[in-house]
Image (tube, rainbow, N blue to C red; front, side, top):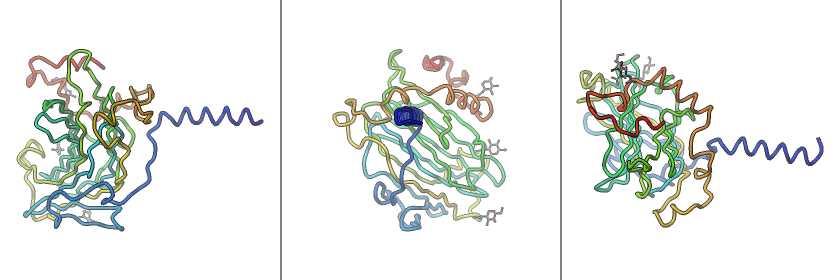
Length: 285
Ligand SMILES: *[C@@H]1O[C@H](CO)[C@@H](O)[C@H](O)[C@H]1NC(C)=O
Ligand SMILES: *[C@@H]1O[C@H](CO)[C@@H](O)[C@H](O)[C@H]1NC(C)=O
Ligand SMILES: *[C@@H]1O[C@H](CO)[C@@H](O)[C@H](O)[C@H]1NC(C)=O
């Protein structure tokens, strides 16, 4: 190959790579996060590049980001509570924590040993959520660390599990539906007792004989715009604003359909008992 061919090849490689989510290097927990409650129910490991939340009868625990962000790609590697995790809830979410808050949630509902976790996702705009979806996962989330990520820009919010899209929430302002795009959100995680509702609808209670329950975290770098509307709304050439990330591509659509066909167990768009009038956003995909 001559020089022009090599350059052409490099350009093609770059274009192909540009549609992928970039890899991030690891930083320690305290660079971007701090413990918000129950410091004595957390454990810092490996020089702060791993941390654990502990739930026992006395308390759960939670942490949050030092900054708030408006748009970006927010990711965490989590190894969920193993064995008997019935009644426990591990939440990983973004929230503006205002009166009419915006929020983007992953909630992992534990189960008795050998039975599947449920991942519940939701998105709030101006304090209104009611957009629950529930999925099983295609692996055991307690065996290894897996990445749970939120890609958030003005056009869409994509929930990823290991770079497989679990869910897409589109900006439907065009049909009058508010979309989170002006409130910066912090990044939070917590482990708590949700046994009044989490496992088999609250039938399965926490067995405290099996405490402490431990969820482990890695991957504390954040690839998002720290700041507010003034500093983050103008086009800045950030990768998540590029056209390739304003909608999902054909391959990702195929993966999303695969997830829906095989792992989705609840969809607010499909619940006409709860919502006699199904939201107009539901037909928009
Ligand atoms: C979970 O169960 C496995 C065997 O199934 C056992 O080896 C391990 O010690 C248990 N872990 C905890 C935290 O109880
Ligand atoms: C727990 O296991 C039961 C039985 O397999 C299943 O119906 C349920 O969806 C699982 N997950 C939760 C969080 O309840
Ligand atoms: C959608 O609703 C139908 C009818 O109630 C039900 O059989 C199906 O399981 C639902 N699917 C999801 C993903 O909620």
